[in-house]
Amino acid sequence: SQQGEEDPQALSIQEGENATMNCSYKTSINNLQWYRQNSGRGLVHLILIRSNEREKHSGRLRVTLDTSKKSSSLLITASRAADTASYFCATATQGGSEKLVFGKGTKLTVNP
Amino acid sequence: DAGITQSPRHKVTETGTPVTLRCHQTENHRYMYWYRQDPGHGLRLIHYSYGVKDTDKGEVSDGYSVSRSKTEDFLLTLESATSSQTSVYFCAISGDGYYQPQHFGDGTRLSIL
Image 1: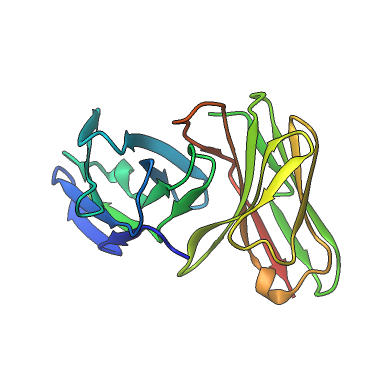
Image 2: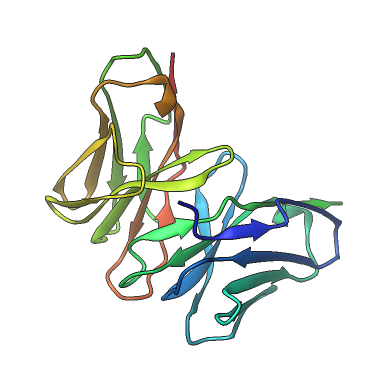
């Protein structure tokens, strides 16, 4: 069963614009993680936010978490063509992060 | 990049044949995972291991078995492959600790005709 659902399913923007992707989930979580997947490759971990945190930054990435709304957002600022990829949220709902449940992803296209 | 190698990278086989996929890590991580990725379903956990000879089922474990006889190797076996098991299979690893990210291999594309 899918825990996280990303929105939108697909997003197309111009280089230099910001990209925002959202993730909603259903049950209480221990932490939420965002991953990127380039075409034909494995997933790459971007950022982890714990349930008691509200916001985290990493370079051009900003993640927010609202546990009352059971939602998270990933913001990529000043996007580049190299940011073109699929982005997935994953939730850890028990113990630590050994059982992640992934959403179906947002496909981001950044046009040069 | 985390030292994870999946083999083979591509395989085509026939329904009813046994198939074994291998995941090898050089990071000495405790946890290893097998996922499948299908259009419209995202990534789903098949089985995972939390140590040598210690494994547990994931969301879609029916039709799959796993083994881990050494820290560095995690094998996924389809005893009698079916067309519904055509998919891209990913191995992942993670270390000990409450808030550990997972690191993924580049996948095995398996086609069952």
